Length: 448
Image 1 (cartoon, rainbow, N blue to C red):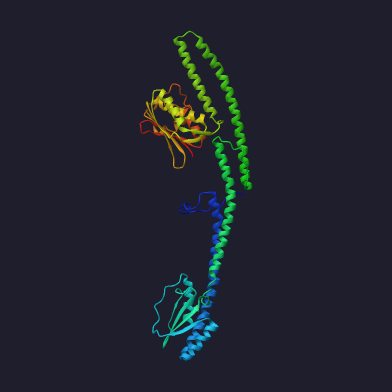
Image 2 (tube, rainbow, N blue to C red; image 1 turned 180 degrees about the vertical axis):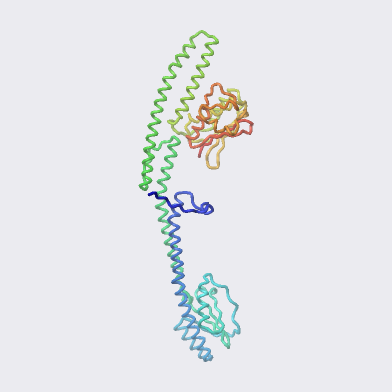
């Protein structure tokens, strides 16, 4: 039986606010249910317990106030009021005085927790038949209640804990503390697991750029260790393939160059003639083609990464173009360094600059840093350029766009392919665009 996974639809507006990292999403999966549970428990506590206790306290206070008011109204003599006030002070913790005011004050603003005022108002309205007024805001520890009587206003000051359950904030505090404690524990455990995945990603990225990751060791959860073991096995297979290919290419290079060297020696000893010069030219082109083929097949994958000053590489490539007859302008920071494979970068930049020199007489090279910490090497020329729809076509190996660029006699259509392979081998990329000079622009991007 085929089992289909349950997919939960999340609106796109909400997705924009969700975290994108594994750490953020894992933390959200753990913390959000905890927070929701705490909110529900808190709401149930206030609704089912706290409000019930508060209502009963308010009812008790309103009953004591109603007793005092009725007792005074039955015998409104000063000595009776004194006895009522004395009894209320000792037994009920109420302070009762009679003021000469003839009207109650205007209603005060409600407290932050309106449920407090509602409970007290409801209790007083049920127990008293005369006008009343109360203030729960002015005094932090007391409640001010005033009741209209025929000869004035009875003012009753009651402790706040007689009207409300004042310990509710402690419950909220402990709930918040528990949420923070659980969140801190979740962060520690999730951070440890995510760090293992980040190390695996860094090792894969370093190896993809030709770096050494021999010190990488799997750790973390079982699934993460399995992924790390699979990465190590894959790395070893790729490394064996690279070593075998390097050895094979070295052998091929030696086997091909030996007869070429003999031919060059025989042509050098032959009597000079037009035919000999033509043969020398063909032999030189053949040697250049073999170098290009081997460079493309080798990919410079075995070269070590080391700090390189980009200014030196750019000026070396610009110098070759200048000797070829092009006017070269260079804008680069002489102190800018990056960890690169120098021979691979030298070949890539030489291919790009010499490709421009073969089709233009003016070349502009600029090295710029990006906000993300990377570097862009921009090469512009004033040649015929390439139509935009053929930009990607130009990167295909052995492809020469004779319709838009003059054919390079020595070219085999591998220069751009090799340069892009070097860029991507460093974690960057190579793209083409139209140049402000009227020709072609090559943008060689390197990550930070």
